[in-house]
Length: 97
Image (cartoon, rainbow, N blue to C red; front, side):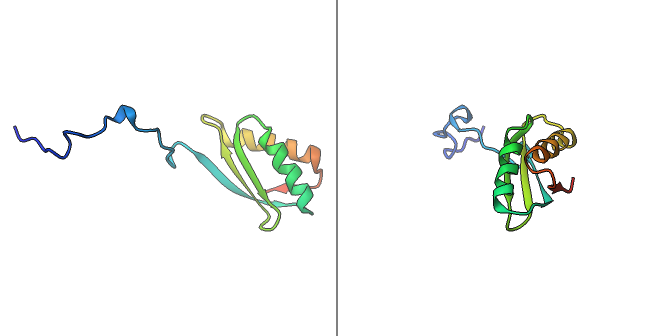
């Protein structure tokens, strides 16, 4: 049987760190309407406290919110909760879900 010396001294897969892939991370960007940078920061904090959100970033300059969902989270139900939480801190905010 042919054996390559290239793989004889390889590091076993068990020793390699787990890498995040696009398939394991679900994220989506939403258009928002928010009046000021301070309000955007409040929305970001509220979104990050919402169950099912791994990380949320709100940009006042681009009027966008990028949400990375926790593993196994349902995007639609999480975003309903994000909108509810954001409206508690900024009642006139809009997130295009």
